[in-house]
Amino acid sequence: MEAINKRTRSLEDSRIKRDGLSKGTVAPLFDLSRLDGTKLSLKDYRGHRILLVFSDPNCGPCNQLAPQLEQLHRRVTALKILMISRGDLEANRLKADEHELTFPIVLQQRWEISREYGIFATPVGYLIDEQGIIAADVAMGNAAIIALATPKEEIMRERE
Image (cartoon, rainbow, N blue to C red; front, side, top):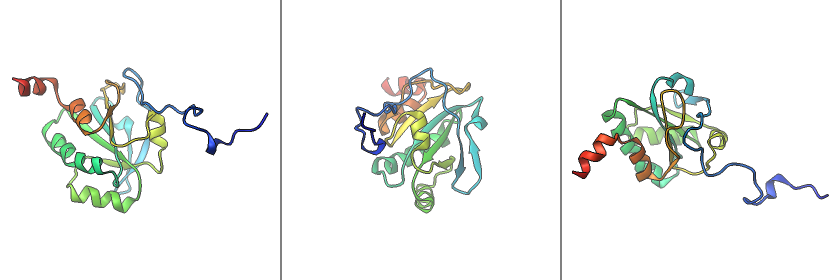
């Protein structure tokens, strides 16, 4: 039997989950470096509701989303926003400075945390509850991420 080279497998043959983790799944833990070099652990956020957003400094939609996330961060104090980005440290620092981002941004080296969360796209977001459980299916794209983070009472007021 011929050995299959992992680098030449098609997406159909891959066993890697690529459609995101489902609601009710325990959020995979991670320890990553912030842009200032200090460490951050997802465990540090237990007891808080979290919007976990995967981003990339070279992603156009991610750059459009960043100021919206900062507004949310300032407005909705009951929700902690945490961004996992990838790529060059300096590019991520420039993005944070450009958009005046004050919420934590941590860096994955390649896609190692994305792999744990089962999705390799940006921007995507997960809502994680106080017990560390994914509270909704993965949100893909800016509008879906903002909707995921917007309190239901606010959505009802906007519809009136």
